[in-house]
Length: 192
Image (cartoon, rainbow, N blue to C red; front, side, top):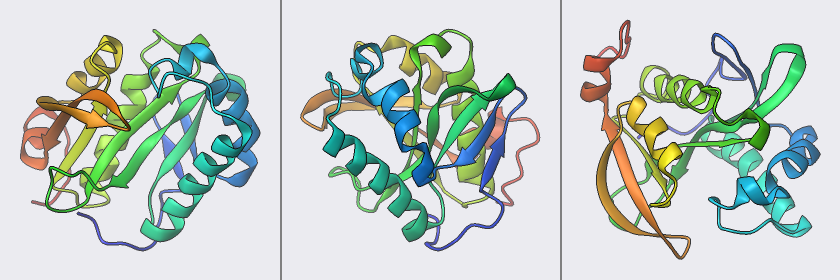
């Protein structure tokens, strides 16, 4: 588990096609309009659109995570500042794990689906977890019916561990260890 506190240099996360900017309060309406109020997006993120109070609480949790842990999520745009999605890393406590885990997450706008952006965001975020945060393991989970999300995780080296409930719904939990990631990732720089 990475140490808490600020992580310099993580305000921007760039990939070959995307630019991720650290989550800011100013992103609230964009996330609400493109993600939280879109039934297609929310179908696999709890099954319903979020109300205004839930949207505000989600944003506040994301902002607090950066403050408390020095890492978090980014808002990603493609060419001409077109919004693509929101993703990155978050610390979670899972009942089955003895210590908090670093988890990978990504939520894409519906019009960005199928273009490989989720894989790009997930791969870059996983690299940050291992190279910048010093994580030993990265976790992620999805509902069993969300095959596209599971494929993204598998492309990034995560492997199925178990099925268990999360937020009251069945989820498939996957993970990748630092050594597994190093073997499959050209140019990995973790120093282990």
